[in-house]
Length: 184
Image (spheres, rainbow, N blue to C red):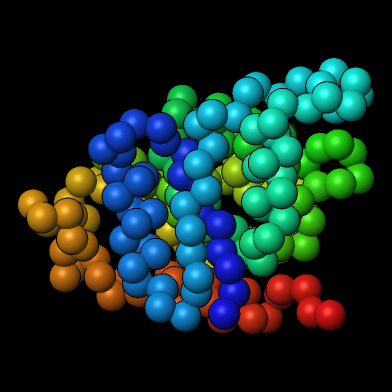
């Protein structure tokens, strides 16, 4: 069973991204998904690596990410782009140069917003970084979830009208991982 790191681009306790990430995990019985916390990572500074003294949080994150075979990104959109905390995690994991923890790992991107656009800007900005990081990213089905509050019932469960689509996303991601994960 593939170990999948789930990175959530929002730090707010009751964020829709966090709820959605947990829902996606629950809908993927064939994947071993774990939310990897990124909020405590200090802002990336290359001097730490150049001096041979990276913060413990960098080392712990890099070591943890090395143990995952794929990554699911669940993110809101901030100012038509990726939240800083998520971009920082990408930067920390991509360094030191030549030792990226991302290279070759299959990825999927799910963006969500309370508004109608579904995080289109964040989704595509994130994909641009993933191309550079050599992460084969699932193309279909696309997952821009607008009006995200309507995806959840009062008890926090996914409403039936959205359930089938979310299951489809995770089934496609499972297939994508099988086709693109490094073998050897």
